[in-house]
Image (cartoon, rainbow, N blue to C red; front, top):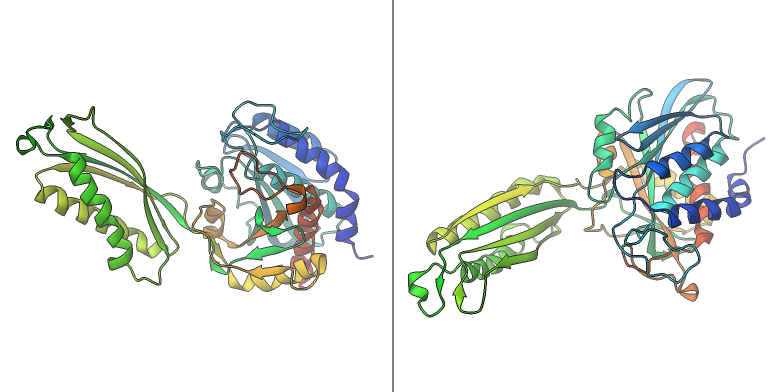
Length: 392
């Protein structure tokens, strides 16, 4: 008898809400998800799976093994919360001051647990399913650490799927971007070193603030005049620190910035160009500098051949035309580290509901989800998995 994943997921809805609200009330920051991990392991005891804890500190690798060897599909959820105060007026709001699940990772864990529950009823003839509960997505590259610790090995993962709840789509809709779906998230620290002095005698000093102004303006030309205008790229200076008071010429200025781009091949070009501009301006105006450029998350690459199976799964659960192809995001996502190693597909699950006031963007203090989306995410994961192993 074929498993009706949609019905099974719907029957779990009240349990999904309970799990999600527990996670939401007890958020933990990156690499601190110890209690979250324990709670998940307690739930997993009722299912026929092998649990391997403490990968990348708090992460979990959960394996459902088939009767015979075969391909391995991985399904991933991230676990960490954000250092932001929860400002929702809801009975399940965070109980931890200054920490909250305002990016939806509580929903991701819940959906993955639901998929484990549904697929526990599925007779897997050949192959394996690896469920990954990943710590530290929010800027600490938990996925990279898990890859380095072998989470995609033994059994060797062939394909990985993940989702992100997102308020840009209503409940019952999903979106995906073929190929490069998110940006590389690089960072740089720059210090302009001049020579301080009295504001009344600028000729006796080297004004680092004036030089900084020239550099900030010139860096926008990297986007407009150096890189192909058809290549998405953003350079943003997010922090400037320098100076003492109004009548003193600052001896130095520190800047912190980010570079967002889709095409990873542009990373060295952008880095070299930024430094060339900085070097030219500072040397021409009598200053020096220090420059540190750090590569962050890579772009998430969605394997085009996996779009059609995802479409079939969403059609089966949500109806036709429920999956929209959308433009890439300049945000970052460390699912990219998994998708660098194996074929990957990462999509967005709609959780918006204007009537319930659920409209705030991810990372907003009032971010929330319409919990009606939980069983839909569960069913899509389970449907995708069954199609994967049955060749549908």
